[in-house]
Length: 308
Figure 1 (cartoon, one colour):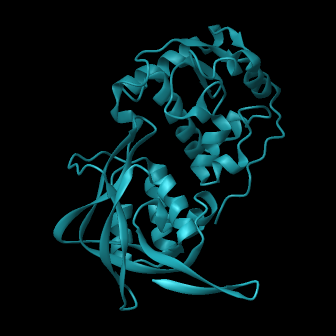
Figure 2: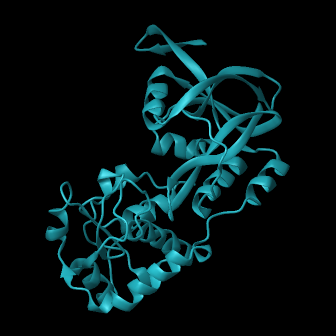
Figure 3: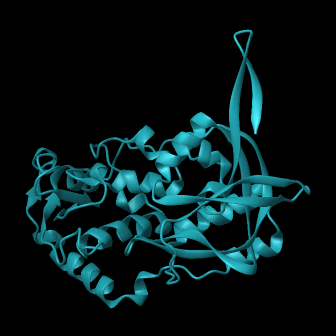
């Protein structure tokens, strides 16, 4: 559809298109803050003859699966239809570059039929995986904010999530770290930063691991504060500290915060992406500046505002 927008006393014709958010894109506040999409209008809607499925395998042990949809007659997915302009569409396409688009007719809760598109996997898969508790929480939050059907929200809330206790290898790795933490040599931030490209190192909760990463922003730095922001839905790249002090105090983290950040340490310690990451990598040491911060019991670290 086309819309007329008045700017500087000139009429400018711009194209706008409806898209359907069924995963994290149901949270319109986060969609605008984190993915920089300017939402012109949004409304709760139904995508008929599709099923919500967690078939996008992602980061084992931390964010094991993301939501997708697949065609299935008689099923339906509730979500948020949102209207955006061409510039925002291009921005969202860059963010969702691992997906294709399917042209669909959405059934808005207010009775309208909306012609638009939905992001679908490039390759249709049927195997499903358990999402993280954080990720499922994002879906439930977005569904509630959008005023989706109560029965559908209850169905989302009842879905199972990843639990580290179901994975013996994770329990073993956590025990190993607990046993060696006091014996690890200290590694400085400067040393860590020198391993950002070749022979990369990653630090999480102070543990420095010789490991590759899918994310360039994780290499050669500590990711504790970055993952803490991820947990709370805070725009990461807009607020990133580069892994520099001050660091959050581990003792001050909530159980949910600490478990989520620890799950990323599990991801790197166990080589969560086979073919890309080293299996059974070496724990090289412990980040000196992180240890100093924890030992002091004090920090000036503050989380940026958490989107509501």
